[in-house]
Image 1 (cartoon, rainbow, N blue to C red):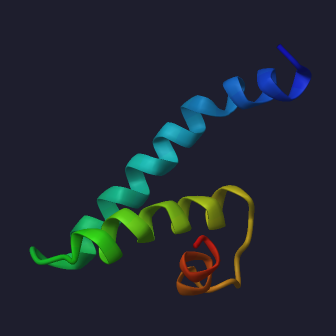
Image 2 (image 1 turned 90 degrees about the horizontal axis):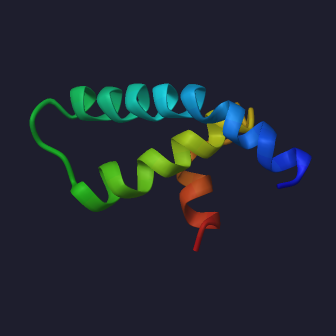
Amino acid sequence: MTMHDEDAIDDLPRVRQMVGAICKDLLEAAGGKIDAVVGYCRLAPATIVRDYFGLIGIPRKDLMEWSY
């Protein structure tokens, strides 16, 4: 295991909490109706990447487009 791998393992509890909060917020913001693919399955990972790597200021829509 490399040093980077150990750092990633140490981050897991924080990442799990962040993922849960982001997904909960997306579902609550949807108000009972959501496009499962775009509004959740694509938006959640884009938000997680943006927040985890500190890409604040980059629109999530751009991250979703760049991910293809």
